[in-house]
Image 1: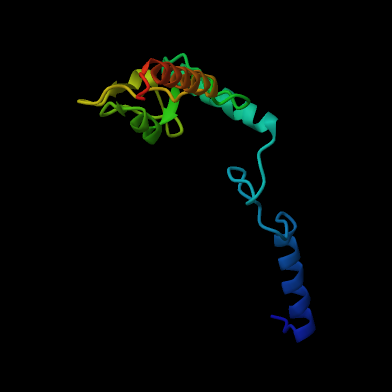
Image 2 (image 1 turned 45 degrees about the vertical axis):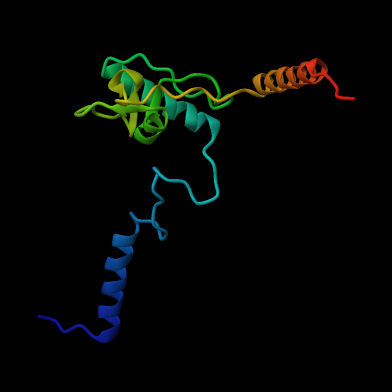
Length: 147
């Protein structure tokens, strides 16, 4: 068996390390699931994610309406558990979620609690304030003045 000197041993170790390192990049790969802090997903990525959610619910037999990202005030029937609780509904025991979301048909009204009222729109608030002001004006006219 031939003896290796220090230079030959260093060259062999360097060659082995180089061959192992060729298939790997120097920086670790970022997770494709999460974005760096402070960045937002591209609209095409969000559309693809929405399509995946719709397909997953369709495989379970649900026809869903997702939240419109351009107008969140439009009605939708897929929400996370806590959002259903805030609306006065509870997810039935044993129901399975799709990415943490539940369909309306998987929920029931909370016992002893009426369904949550939708919030007033700005137009409704304006009409309410006008009606209130006109009522006060009528009441002021109707009261007799004391002399």
